[in-house]
Length: 315
Image (cartoon, rainbow, N blue to C red; front, top):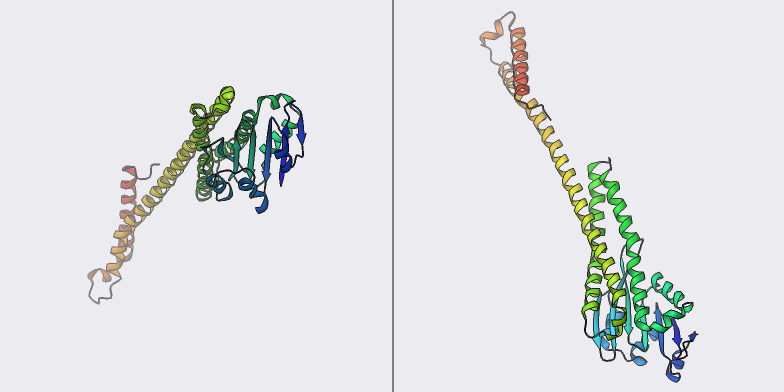
């Protein structure tokens, strides 16, 4: 689907403009939004707009890293939105000059939809041109990162106070770390992109809105810090539970070692008197059985007391 908004030189908005009208009218600027376009609609990027083949390839192929490319007469941006259910990146491509803004995305993006609706009722946006519309799109995209980070942060806090089994907790913890890493792969490159915008000498169209883009950059820095902080917390939780699990294993092994050590001499004694030799002097003792049992009991209690005195049973 393609939808078009055009602004006349009299600062009036025209909606539902056709591609043919863009050629026949002299507009102040216009916005063409490609939403899940068909193959024929995607072909307009080349046949009508004559964009560079590499930029078109970036639109049509696999998800690109957020970036900025300069071409003759326009600039090409790759932005990322985040799906709030799957936390996966969804690409939003922008071609921009002072005369037009072309947005291209393979799936509907709520943030772009919000800006499109906003423009239809906000005359002050028309006067500020395409760069301000691009700012609004980027601002919406970044603002929608925050609920995702807050949601992940809540999950981190829940795990920190969790009492579930260590195995289940670690499985969820590693899954959460993977999600944080996936989100980080979107936010960090977006921050790098904003840094390029703020320091680029080729983006003259955004010079009047640098303060706005600097505000987005500050948000991305905050988001980056939140992600790193949560990753550090998950690492601390992981290390704490691994250490606790290791301590429990050491306690179990120590207990088993004590039991085994105590029973070793008892097993040795039982093994000797379990041999089927005919001539064993002790076999003829009247109370030999009770003597051996008593000796084994004394030996066992003595070893138990010695281990306890050495502190083997202390946590």
